[in-house]
Structures are given as structure tokens and as C-alpha cells.
Length: 418
Image 1 (cartoon, rainbow, N blue to C red):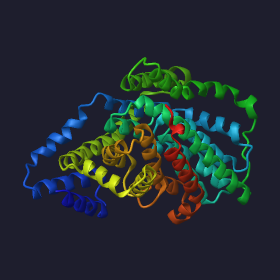
Image 2: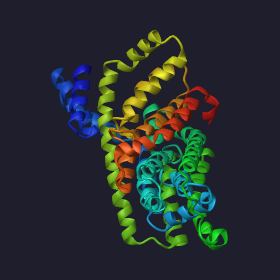
Image 3: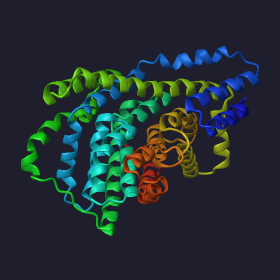
Image 4: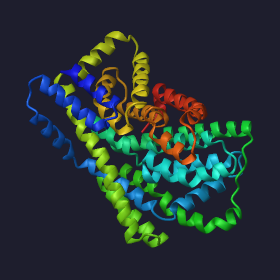
């Protein structure tokens, strides 16, 4: 039953069928060829939606949308320019610092790439940045968002692996900062080589001090989320609802830029994003059901242990598989599809499952700016007007940074202490 599922799944992907529908098509064909009732699919689709922790996903998305619906994006860019605008390639550095700060609000790389890209790429082009390099900075730096809490991919991994979401959030902070620092260094080197301009903010600290004070409440959201979770005040789902209330309070009372229209648009965008994630969750659960029934994870774990003599070889093999899969599948779909299988393998070799989760998210995040899927890559290229090949060439230093951080996370467990 596994072979038809795999072949039909990849065939549907090859003809540009959406991932979730390709998953369902593969499962349906496998069941039909095996003579099993198709009604089983409906039951498996419904089951994963009945999860209280899963409610955290739409509420964290809504909190980010509400926060970014007003002037906070402007404050964020200005703060970043105050911090790094005097460096060579200052606007490129602003993109990275902005992504680190934005990640603590949105938890979504795609939202980051769109919001910060539309704000900064036109300015970078006006200052003489090559189109490909502007697209490369935005598409790579936006992936920092998937590690800085609240992270939607880490929530998904926690749900499929039964690992504490709190532990994943705390453990994701240091790797996220490492990724940001590495990309900051890459931009600094390229900026010196290409002699890119500095971008100091006119008026400096004195002129924009009120904006800094105004932005502080929004920038404290990740501190609020981590603190509330770490001290056991509330569950992740409860914290996500509190985050929405916090966003309404900050945007409505402190910023005073919240309107009924902006609330409505935030709710609609949240519904669309949640729907896209949920259909992938529902479809992937049917594949997980088939794989579990056929004992694929257990058999694969046995084969891996028999084939690779050392744990470091298994970890390397897992990383290579995730890098390849990430280039073809969206991050949420890949997490849900590979998570249960790799958890079984990781447990067999004694790999910490929190460490595995961070490895998985960093690996698959590279796929967000790697063709042929490359969601943040295509968003950034569309904003900048760059050709995909031009942007990919400019991405080479960022790929190098991601691989170095990935190897450190994979082989230095102390970096994922939680």
C-alpha cells in the first residue's frame, strides 16, 4: 500500500497539485488499490482537528496580524535603523534586525517576508542594492521568524511529537539569534565588497525617542509569551488567547491605530492562513495513519540503525533528507509529514527530541528560500523584480550561514538547552 501512495503523491506534486490534495490523492489511491473502505479517510481527516493545543495556531497568527495592522512596522524599521543604520549596508542589516524583532510578534516567515520586504526592498533598490541581493537578504532573514517564539512550525512539531511546546520555544531562542548574527555578518562582508551605503536615521535617537517608547510594548510580546509559559501561568493555548488580548490592548489603546476595518482584515487573513495550515494537518494525518498501520517508522528506524554504525551518521542522513524535502514541500507540510517518522528514528539513537525539532525547523526553513518551492524567495523576488537565478546566486553566503548553524545545532547539544 505504501508504494502507490508515494508514487501518486509525487505524481500529483509534479503536475502542481497543492500539497494537501496530493497527500489525500495518494492515500485515497492506496486505500482503493488495497481494497479498504474510503470512509476511513473522512474519519482520519476529522480526528486531528479535535485538539485543544492546536487552537494556539490561529490565535498566535491573529495576534501577529493585529499587531502589524497599524504603525508598529514603521516603528520597528526606525528602531532597526537606529541600531544598525550606520553600518555599511545598513538597510540590509535593518532587514535582519527587523526579522529578529518581527519574529517575536508574528511567528511566520511568510508574513515577515511580505511585511518587511514591502517596507525595505524599495528603499534598498533606491540606495543602489542589486535586485538579487535585496531579494536574498529578505528571503533568508525572514526565516529567523520560525525559531523566535511564538513559532508556528515549532507548535506543529510539538503537536506531532508530543514534545513540550514550552521547551521548544525556549530552546529556539539561541539558534534563532545565532542565525540572525550569522546573516548579519554575511551582509556586512558583502556590503564591504560591494561598497554598499550606510543608512543612518535622520535626527538620530533624540528625534525618534517617542517611537522607541511606543514600540517597546509590542517588542515585549515574546517576553510575555515565554515568561507566561516558563513560569506555568498558562498553557500555550491560553497564552495565545492572552496574546490576542495583549495585541488588541497595545494597538487599540497605546498605538490608537486599530479600526473595525483593520480588525476585520486581520481576522480574514488569520482565517485564510489557518485554513491553509489545517488542511495540511488533516491531510498529513491520513498519511501518518497509513504509515503507522504499515509500521513504516519502526521498520525505517531498524533499517537506519543497521545501515549506519554511528549516531552522527544517522544525524547527518536526517539532515540531508530534510534539506531535500524542504526544497519541495512547504514547511508546515514537511514538519507534519516527517515529524512522526524522524521522532521514531531519533528516539532509537538517543537523540533529544527538542534538539531534533530545532534541526527539523532550521533544515526546512532553508527550503523557504530554495527553488523550486521557495515561498519567501518568490515573494522577495516579486517585490524586488529580481530574476530567481540572480537571487539564488546572491543567497550563497546565507546558505553557508544556515549550514554552519545547522551543524552546530545538530552536533553541539548544549546550544539547544531548554
